Length: 394
Image 1 (cartoon, rainbow, N blue to C red):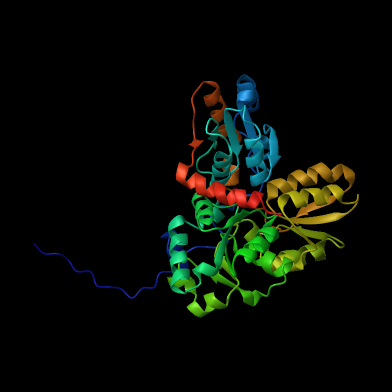
Image 2 (image 1 turned 45 degrees about the vertical axis):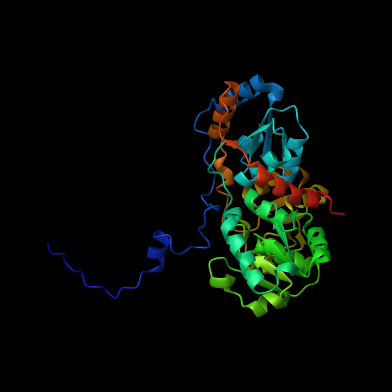
């Protein structure tokens, strides 16, 4: 039997070919961000009535949580709205609710399961509602990073601080290694606590929040920060760089907030004289440095509530929230626009649509538990330890 030999061709694959093969990434077209213009309306006009009927049938047995970035069609059925940690705490404060339906993304539902009782069941209407940032740090990658820090002789000096926007596995790693969780509201307090425990911080998984907090809020320099890239040997860093650094930032970011650029800020200032630029600290450092105000989702809402009538605002955060705020404050004469010209939604957050919510509620009303999010006991114990350290922060 003979086989035909095909001569090797000296052909270099194009960036597009590599992208299609999954061997490269387009930073402006990541899973987690979508720029389609207007979202489609619900396909079934009866969905609203069906959602109301199912929720009414369940009564106090169900508690629906709605993250600020959810679609309006979903948020109307939320018993409470807020950011990820506020919602998880709200769920824990409702022990009589047998079912917690979390309209958000996977890591948020995990946090709710960690903080609620064993009798409560957390449901995510669409299991594909993940988070591109949280996915940028896996348990295996972080364990390998710790090995690199150990070999460099610095692990004993390092305290991990993980953003709330991380998986239960990463929260558990943080708890196991003496670290704490933070939100975008208390990141500075978390870092101050960490530097009282050790000389260096490993900040996971959002490099921008870590850098912005260290440099903008705590007076460190950019030279105090290095970026650990899990896709490069030793994170792309030398032992000397790790020894010299104060902040070891994981190479992760939010696919929505990472799209805002300095050009976005400059452009909106030209288009709208007197505009106030207000951005989330997950934005790039140069965007945060050029903004007038920087703060968490809750900070953004409160800032606009307190803003004077007739003021103009360009907001750098997810579009569903910006649109909702623009409509809410329009009667007060406040002009609120999206920071970037390109319309971008969080596509993974938007997977929780009305059809999925109706399916989840009707299934529960019929006695069928669907899409339960359940964290194993060992992971939960260490993750809860890290969360409790955050709750104990001064």
